[in-house]
Length: 242
Ligand SMILES: O=C1O[C@H](COP(=O)(O)O)[C@@H](O)[C@H](O)[C@H]1O
Image (cartoon, rainbow, N blue to C red):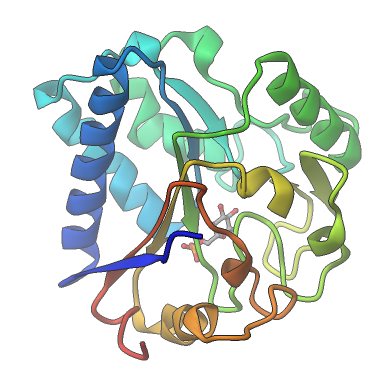
């Protein structure tokens, strides 16, 4: 397995600019090799900053946005207009500012599109299978202070689901409680996994994820690796206990 790489930036704004620049380069590279890149987005504080940087830097990039396919690693099962929705945040900061093909943007179902989290997860699994997706060119993941990634939380039964692409969560310890998440199996099919982490409050989770022998049930971030590369994009505070 390829060893994870760690890239440390001064602070959250510098981290956001660097990740946005690297993602634009990666998308253009995949396209110039004849591919149609698939990316999976995450929610959260640093993701919001990266999305804003993507929108700012996009006009100067060589990316053909009509040939980019967008997925999510997890989502909150709430109304589409809710402030809690990862999709809404990503659209407002990033996706609405570039010329994507709407048919290539694949949000996880909201409460308007599915009856419950299990139906939402089953629908998303089908959508990924029908589209022949799974090996994301780049999967971006935030990390919670408890070490959660996507909506896979320490000690939760979803960590042991290995026969599905996506699962429902009804009792997330972080609000809102209802969520849909890709499973470890699905996340680990990604070519590149990019962890995006900023702030002192995440330093302990980052250190635990890197420590030898950490169980993914205790720190889910330790259980995700890309098939080609795994990069931890950190600011100095998040890297302070490595
Ligand atoms: O709830 C979630 O949390 C994580 C981490 O978010 P952050 O605000 O602590 O950076 C995020 O990656 C995930 O997509 C989201 O649903």
